[in-house]
Length: 391
Ligand SMILES: Nc1ncnc2c1ncn2[C@@H]1O[C@H](COP(=O)(O)OP(=O)(O)OP(=O)(O)O)[C@@H](O)[C@H]1O
Ligand SMILES: [Mg+2]
Image 1 (spheres, rainbow, N blue to C red):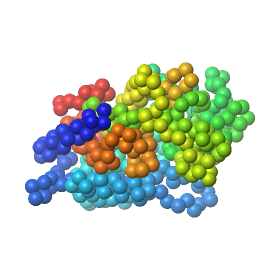
Image 2: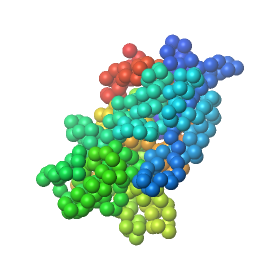
Image 3: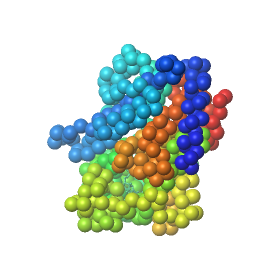
Image 4: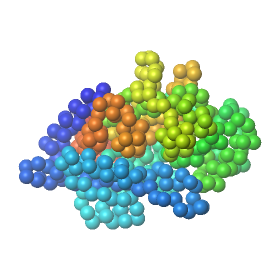
């Protein structure tokens, strides 16, 4: 599997350097006989949260300078010229005034329910190719309820749920406790703490009210699935690579009071003084058949949302072996040491440089093969069946 990702990069490198002149959106400059791409990395940096009015996890989705610099170093090492562009009010002007060939996008965006789509929307507007999923996929994936409706339509198992549009909504009788309460449009386990898992209507309404007040958005209530915590990384488009599955075991964390991948668990992961040292198994401890089922459902979810280039699919495997898909992360963390996706690539013997440059090359290949049109639309329904086509 890992081999096919590496091979795809080589093939795509060859394709890119041969046919760039025919393709709008690409104009790599000739530099001593070599083609150099000018790549902008778009990102939002974590800031110190000094406002008592903002939730403690307000900036958790954003990236560290360490991640941005690691991506830059990887791209430079492959011969690209790299500029850093923090995603903010000046981004549109920057891209109008400064020509770049390609954007490596990890920006989470700042405002609104579809914040992750903001940078891709700007880039589509101007006609600049970018890595990763497009505006629509990013908007859907950030909306957990819409994502789950698509899963239901596609027969992808997902926990039973109800979207609370107001604090006064009544709980559907079809949902069985324990339930978990989360803001509908967040990531990085924002809004998820031990009290988010509720076992009575009183506690449920308390948590729903808390989530509305703090996150100012609709609130998702979901059946809590006891079982294994799994996450599946996917790279590429034509013949996607399914990375070794990660299983996270929280048994060591009992003294912390945390028992799932809550915000505290993610934020303070590895802190032994807080007893927040979950055990990672990569590959996960699954028999062959279960591993196949888990990977199949992850790929189905990735394709159902129309992801490009990379994603990470979060799954809870129930005691009766049903892989319930919680969500798809089309912008998974890319910290070279700590992110789940980079743990998986290490397990697959894919170096960080190969991961980052592979993402770039897969995106370039998509644009060259017109799978993504110049205005960002999916060029052909064939992507969902994994068939790349030059037509
Ligand atoms: N229905 C559920 N059943 C069991 N555990 C759940 C459920 N929903 C969420 N969790 C737990 O909470 C964690 C975070 O949930 P989820 O993936 O929905 O949130 P997120 O904020 O989008 O996360 P991410 O950090 O991956 O972006 C899960 O990894 C899992 O441990
Ligand atoms: Mg998740």
